[in-house]
Length: 143
Image 1 (cartoon, one colour):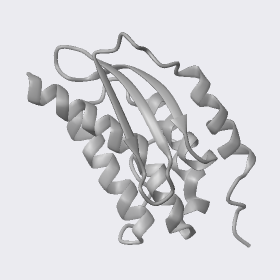
Image 2: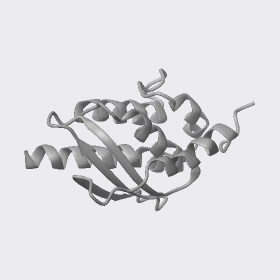
Image 3: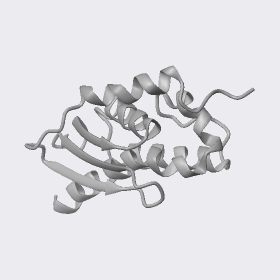
Image 4: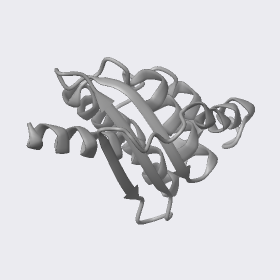
């Protein structure tokens, strides 16, 4: 029997987005929407002089899975740079597509394992990573 798609752990992570309030003064603000499901995120990001994340703020309009993914991104993004986020996003996408069996190298993604069987939810889960990558790419282009 498989785990339920929306379980207590996922719902707890979804609520945790409230810990990462939007920051209108952030250096980088990115808005993204997942075309398949319509999930949306506004991600505020601050970085240090080396381009490593120092702070994340979120406004997420997504299912509980998208919110849970955003909370995992925010919890573990500090100290990571563009290459780290690209690598994590590629691993997550591969894991969902079935081309990769080992868990992505991002803490907490084992909790999202039930979503692997629901491709329509994958865009919402990847959305926070896509937004963070866009913010860090914009930072790199401006540097």
